[in-house]
Length: 165
Length: 421
Image: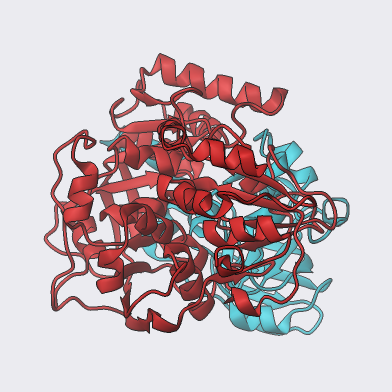
């Protein structure tokens, strides 16, 4: 899978309360969640984001609550993937489970600026800054997680396993 | 090399004799938990799997507590959806308003989370049960759906960081202060992907309530779980509660820890975490002049009977400052009742404290005490992120029940000694 999009860059410890504030958790409808995605740190995010765009965060992206509404809000806002220095663990597994591509690459995070166009080759784990031409590698997924991703998320993966049992 | 408690519990739930950090394992789980925010998504995903019923109706707990009693029509619809699912699947541990509580206070009270077990919950503070020697960790709704169908979950085996607390606690220093101090030391990602194990004579001397406060906030350091070894106190707590037999597991003497951090607690003062991260801690006597508009006492972190007793000690014969609103919410109906029996409710109401039914409401800015723009709260909860308790330009300061109660009386962040001479 390949993506190209412009970058929305944020700092360290972007938590699930700013990704989707709890006051909007009285619904799990993806379109509704997308409208309020990131609004407490970037009021215009949902208006400015376009399909395929990419979020870059620093350390501990997605820290805080276990709400799957957070990766869901990002995904339904049209974001194609999230790149960070590191991810909080529940956000990490939630993203894999729902099929939101995420990549860990401290080098890319350091070298890419807000608003720049980048492309991502998910199979190779390669990130390319289209304005500078520089390429960066990301940490590969362990096989087990790769399989969940390839199966299209945890639910499809389990369905496949149960059908084969 | 021997295994840590986390590794032993994970191994015991597979068909293997041992597991190593970094390995990915599929394990059986003993309890699966969800609330009114996370369960609706889980049910929708569960239905996609195509199994006829949940794997075991006794091993699933569903607790509407976040926006319950329901704050609006949408949240009422969500609760209705999970209630109907719980009834149709005959889920034995569905707790309706009236017998409910805040999930992480309620489940241990009901004896549903036991030493040596694996408990997963679609709520990040599921790590609370680590205080009972449970490998307990937060997961998402899709994980909950998968576990409801299969009784299993996948984990990357975490390495373990051991924390050793020695020395003598100063007056008014509680489990909350120890965990805030620890998070202040290692940072909000200091234990990312790792199991934390809390040990030492100070932990041995803590009450079960205080231990649960510590384990509750392991996630605030990025931790996967916050484990405390089962001992006589744990067994006493579980006597007449445990719904199943249990087999506690312990770290082996030669267990391989990624890191061992030792603290002499003798110099630790009551702590306050400043906005907007739990790691922004400082001793309360170095807080400066911080006026507050609201104090919140309760939650899955500090809503247990010991917390209420400490708050009552401070509110007794005192009155809340005229510029401060105080909301106190006991963790469960049983704790509410116990507080009434002990006369604590009289003290709270005489002091000008509003007492709420158990709910997560104010902690996450849901309802029952949302902050306006520019307002400041001192809170015994666990998160002080931007907008956590209301307006994005409001502020949350995290502290113990003693500090929150003292601050409510003076109107600014205060050491309990200012109020109790």
